[in-house]
Amino acid sequence: MSSLVDLEEALAHLTCQVEEMSDVIARQDREIDRLTARVQMLMNREAEREADSSGTIPLADQKPPHW
Image (cartoon, rainbow, N blue to C red; front, side, top):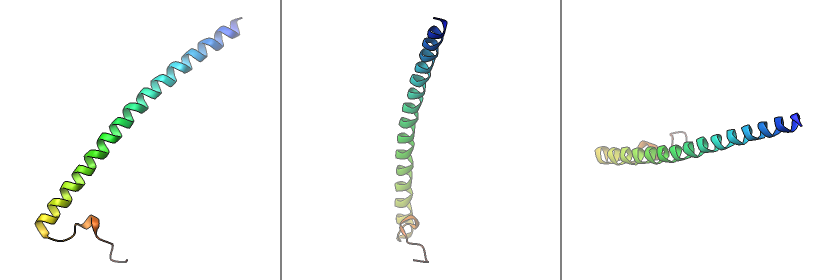
């Protein structure tokens, strides 16, 4: 009987840990999405600034010289 109780306690503990990890992963996914959008916005802003100041193709959109 004791081993069954031990198994139930271990299962309850693992279930709790899985739920906590799921919450952390969901939060990290939202944060990654937010940061990805922010990086994209900054890249667009910099490309516009580069195009306005030099009138050339932004460096990020140019092919490397060895192509």
